[in-house]
Image (cartoon, helix red, strand yellow):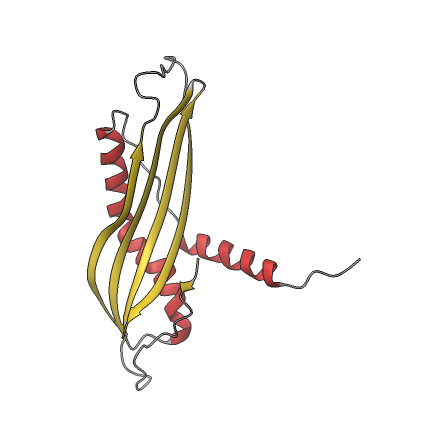
Length: 166
């Protein structure tokens, strides 16, 4: 979860008293896949609760002067004793035009605030797609993107720390 492509942010530097300006240029489905490989072959017992595994990641990158892309990458895997019921993968992005955003605030803004703004759209799409796929709608719980950001940051710091040789 980080800015990609090693591109240096190109936010406009100006007087400290200028307000940050954010404009959503657009939102879009970047990639979408829904598979129900066992439809018709798998019968769920009435008392059986399927197992649903959700994986969420957030990425951002600079795509032009003062224009950034923030993307939620969500994967849902649903299975029962008899096999895989469905797999859903969606990448949902937003393009944002940012001005006067301090460089130290840029990464948290793109990886916390932007996903928080676009998550309701992802949530609705996931519910609609699973329902249209023949299953009860998958209603995602809200995601604490700040906590996700901090966890990923700690993991990256631990991975970069030198391991002492015993």
